[in-house]
Amino acid sequence: MRKLSQFPQGFVLPLVIFAAVAVLFFGMFVLNMNSGYSNQISHMGEVTRCRAIGESAYSDVVARIRAKTWNERFFAGKPYVEEDVAFLEGSYDLIIQDTP
Image (tube, rainbow, N blue to C red; front, side, top):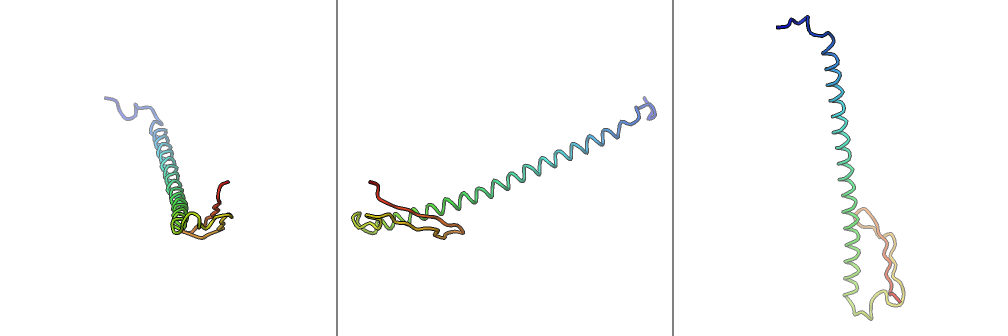
């Protein structure tokens, strides 16, 4: 059996430094992944809100078209324009016209 004094000197310090660097890199990796996940969630919220705004504008147009006959449509003969309509903390522009 070897005595403690027979082991190479200075073996523990590099091992501790390596462990500290490994823990540091792991912590940076976890923080980086967490920030990416947070950004993805915030972008998904924006996409969902934009889709809800678009679908509500579309359903409003379809309801107005179905309310009257096609010959009495509200955009007959000239384009119908709504600009900067506020909805769900956002806004949309609406332009409807007959195609030639």
